Image 1: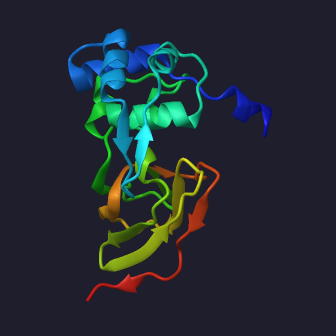
Image 2: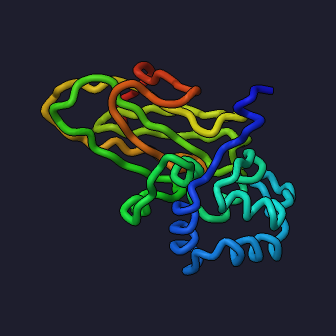
Length: 204
């Protein structure tokens, strides 16, 4: 096991507090820890019961102490935000909440004049990460279908090319399970990157 994996990752307390206010109307770390302690367990998409983190582990997460995926994963699912938005080094703002959620349908428009690599990063909920995620991308008259298998990886990125065609056509992606999705241009982020330049088909 690598040293980085042993150290875990840190949430930013300010981000956590803002997220708690959004979800529960209160930014109290102890209230959140009480809530998780009372709930005690959650159910994965496969029906398995998973014990939620302990009271002290919840407080460590909220206060920015290093925690591992078994702690921040289910807590982020409870809050309803991906860990990437809460992590230390990210400054969360109210405006981020517009798309800071897990949902099945997403859309985005690249500027018409842009040419080069574009990408879509898909982050599943912790509780459904072990399941295959089927997706369909619609871009004008074109359709791409695929399946994402995340394994132990937090997110996967789909990359393809865009030409300067003078158009800003919406890219619409629909996923079988709710995910958090971001769109971008240039070199794709993350460890799991799939090139989807081929196998597009014309919509019927």
